Length: 212
Image (tube, rainbow, N blue to C red; front, side):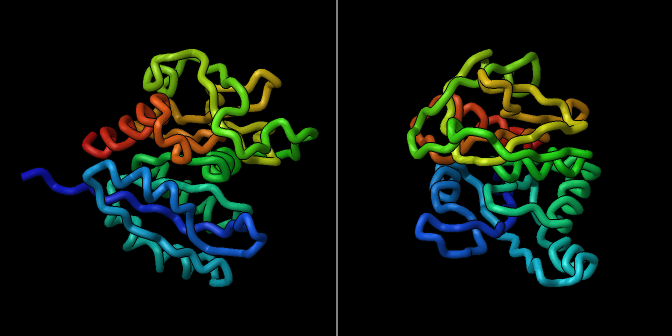
């Protein structure tokens, strides 16, 4: 009998469409994961708590999981970066989505900047193309060019992680650590594209990495 894998999702601060401050993650991520034989573990973060105390508090939940998803949100905290560094050191499979990707980048000497236009803010399923460089991500997606959705107003200006995809206006759209089994962050929201073949390939690869 196969053992059900556990995927931890860090609860994040974010602002709802109606402007309310929430702590959680978007429902479409949970909906997307329902197609896989996995158990989802919600990992709440008390951002008002002492960083060291909070790290020790969530560590048991982290250690229960075979992989971690860093969902979108609105702000990066010190505890977020500490947890990402721990996941990296433990070679745990990590998939970062939007702010999750930015958190991964910032953890490794990254810098964020504000976009000068609204070209990356849209409710449409497909907003702009992304060009992929030779990488684990491109081998997973089996393509050098894909179309993605886009809902962000900041971008990764620099990072020590490998930037492996860019929009046509030069904005980094994906990062990865090539020395890890699966440590990939994407700037878009594949969890919102339930019928998109590239989103399926990405999540399939993440789930498969849990066995490695």
